[in-house]
Image (tube, rainbow, N blue to C red; front, side, top):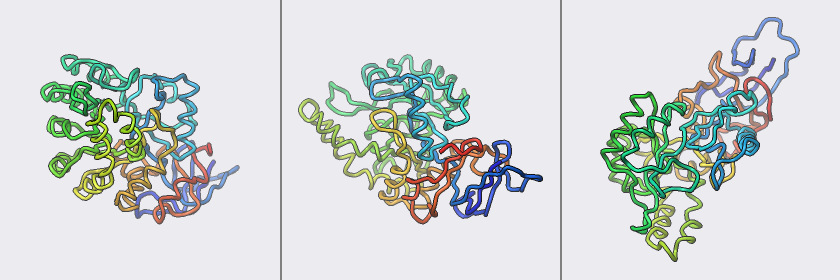
Length: 358
């Protein structure tokens, strides 16, 4: 039995002095006859959320189970206990049977245009097959489907939209019919209006947002997951393309230069912003604290940036926080993370399903 004392942050402004863990679940009533109790003290948050992460994937494609386990353990030890896996070719259902690993909400496998994405990552198809594949991944995932909305077009020498409007509308309608939400990788500007007007639920990265499309996102309630720790790699990517794709390289640099202004403008317009790291491709796992700090650097108030990986993020994904009877997934810190989000980088204890795991 676990007794957690200190300041339990049930919500941004709702704080309790203690909670108990009974049978792996949260309780705010002291259980009768409690014996052999382990006590943990500190500032307590619900397990953090990484809403754009890839377990079972590295820069070259799917990885073996041992590598996927190490990825999940790295995220866990950083305090990430709920992951929205935004596309993976690996079958990671075995993780669901592990009480010591983060819980995963899967978006199936990426769906991309032929030869318009990273090799070995996605189903690479043509528009006529989009509805079929979206339906397939909606059934395979956990309520999400992931499209690749834009990528470099070698003939154009720059980022362009991947899908015609009519096919996107039909595919998103099919996902919604099957009870799944749809998100899309989008770096550039061109694909955004069609995706939003077609009914998409979320956009990843969203570096191409402009003063024309920001109001549309806000009006339609489309969330974004900026993955700023990933956008930080754009200058290096651009340098690698200078000789062959100079238009693309210049475009990537512009998107990078305005990244903080873009995120701040989206937030100020009322667009919901959530924390995601894009770990598992070329980035290491365990970067959730760094991404929260990036949102603050972009101009999002610290408490809202914290909520974007804690209370608001869990509500958006339909998973409980530290409510009565919820699974006891929580992280303990030495200081108040509301006062300084840098505290997130040093969790004192990580509790998964009621047991101290790290």
